Amino acid sequence: MARMTPQDFRVRYGPWALVAGASEGLGAEFATQLAARGLNLVLLARRGDVLEEVSMHLQHKYGVEVRTLALDLAREDLVTALAGQFDDLEIGLLVYNAALSMIGPYFTIALEDHLREIAINCRAPMTLAYLFGQPMLARPRGGILLMSSLGGAQGSALLVNYTATKAYNRLLAEGLWDELREQGVDVLTCCPPAVSTPGYLASAPSGSMSALTPQAVVSEALGALGSGPTIIPGWTYRLANILMQRVLPRKSTIKLMGRVTRGMYQKAL
Ligand SMILES: NC(=O)c1ccc[n+]([C@@H]2O[C@H](COP(=O)([O-])OP(=O)(O)OC[C@H]3O[C@@H](n4cnc5c(N)ncnc54)[C@H](OP(=O)(O)O)[C@@H]3O)[C@@H](O)[C@H]2O)c1
Image (cartoon, rainbow, N blue to C red):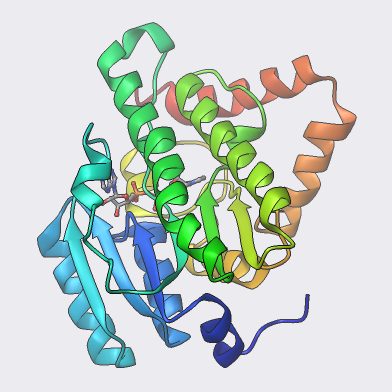
């Protein structure tokens, strides 16, 4: 698909976009690049004060309307917490970006942390896609973008449950893409490699793996909306993915990922 102008983008995915996990990193960058295209924003994350700062900045710089909601996406009563919050808004784009990434050997991580990871990384995106996707289908117009990871294409030591949750997002988006692709709703999953966000840098990775910038990843992802189901940002990573998924035997791919994650994290653990 040819690159959309900001005006086309607004017509197709506006007037409001909801970004879940918008206070920093890739989420704040999604909010910025969507505001630059003229979309009004609903920003959601736990830290309301940080969301307010992002909101003030975007309103001032781009003249868009912004609403914030401080909410823990792991809440059991997520549906109730969201009920009626945005009934007055036409949300044409959902970006589910929030995630918890537990790093370490599987059995050294508490079961409750694995379960929290599933709540934030799987239950919440599925719930938001359901709640906000239905009105899009009724219009019929809109977009849903779920953040997965290059790591979600195979299992990985030290990131066992995290990579499994990212595989869930990828498959959820791919299935939805096929169901909705002729019904006016564009679905995309973005599968980046390492990205230099505060969250990634705080995990203290070591080794030689170079990280993409949030700006580059978000720009590629938004540019690929409408050409789903999947975008892997960065052509070298697209090539690496072909090698790992189509050339190497599955066992070798999993072991290779394990070598990479052990190299990145074993020292920090
Ligand atoms: N960075 C990478 O290297 C990388 C690579 C591949 C894929 N990804 C994917 O890209 C996405 C963003 O990554 P990132 O590195 O930008 O993450 P991040 O820096 O950790 O930021 C995550 C965002 O989600 C929010 N969040 C976290 N837990 C939440 C909760 N329980 N409820 C509500 N909001 C919550 C955080 O805000 P609060 O703390 O204010 O709640 C923050 O705004 C994730 O889905 C990740 O899996 C990242």
